[in-house]
Image (cartoon, rainbow, N blue to C red):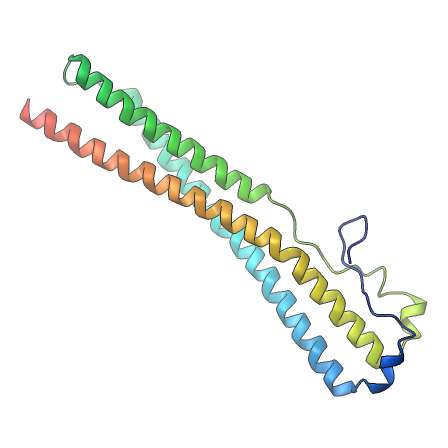
Length: 188
């Protein structure tokens, strides 16, 4: 469960009758596994952020280079059909690059990683619980944090993937358009 601050809280009842059947070693293993998965998801979140930042920087450089190209471009032929063709290519490339950058920005802005709520753990009541109950409650808390954060991470990666595809298409169309322009220039 999460509280109003988006922090994750424990769900195990401290007075549980099932506590009698709990084995300390099993609770240790469950808690260690939950911590490991939580840390792996936290790293995955950081990696998604880092990948997006690198891709955004690359897209920015590519966009700046494209704007420079647009600023220095002079039509080779004055025919209307050529001007329409080249304008459509340029608009398509521009739109793909801009939308790709917007998706990268959306990926960066998509949620924050929810931390484990220490307010429910660091308390006198929690300190009175048995070792088995405490460990299992902590494991539930970690599990809940992982579950809540999975959707955010998947959203980040989805926006990143779409942005990467758009930037790739924009770059490929730009490269094809550039080659066609060079062929036309050479033939002229």
